[in-house]
Image (tube, rainbow, N blue to C red):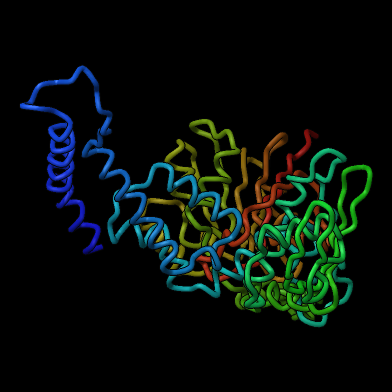
Length: 424
């Protein structure tokens, strides 16, 4: 930062020296200052160009200094490159905003990058239940597109991003262009450390064993297979990222005399992040005056955003302190266990983030549907297992990005379910 500020301040002086040098060159080609009818192109550099070059250099220097290429996910690298095209002011605040997460928690960034990459490959990789250590049935291959007869560029990019995400976790060097080319040419090239021999068109290349192999087909598909060690590392990385932060398991809890109340007192609380609130409500058409219910409203983030859109909102929250906090902001909130409330059938919308507990969320959704009027719409944020593993609910699904609830204390994947209540 100090070097950057010093050099920005020195730009006028550097340009003055440059102009003086230009004039000296021109005078060296003249006698008595007489123009020889020849123009010497010495170039022009403006102060704006100098400052722009310094700004771009400063940002790229920080990126290289902290080796962020080794931590950032493929999607983040694309966003960073886009930022480099028109970088913001080089300030401590902006550095912290764009790079702070990688510098503060490089290992967490590696895990998130791997999760982002693998969650898009197979639904099993989204499931925090299937990724638990010891779970059976892990995908031993993924199917990729982009390997046509004439071009493998798109398919190769996918393979590169997958292997780089895994390499970052394993502490291996990122895939080189020559290694990737060797794999596309010979699907077995990266199973073990070794040398791919030269052929008519390519030099010999030293490769790092990745424990994977590739099979390409005439339909443009490619199957990337994971050996036992590579698959084990994928499993461990995803299990560590998703974590055991929720009392969320495949088996249900033994029944208690008042099961709904007993469970509700033991549920974890994960408030909906602001970005998730905006994304979910961005897909809803809320008219001024619409009646909207938020069960298990927590600290009321949906209530705030819905009221700002002109809705008439009611929250239900079992925790007295959270309910009181919502009331201090002017919301109508009933302090009660939602599963013990009586359905009214008169709401236009239900927007909810029910507890992520095993399969208990299904009871909340089924009960909430009974609060809707005919033609009303329910929108629920659920763990991804609701879509890919349990099969208890039907409707329209829309997966949220990996790590959408990280700031609230859980990395499990989440999805949004939309159900319309039919007209009687």
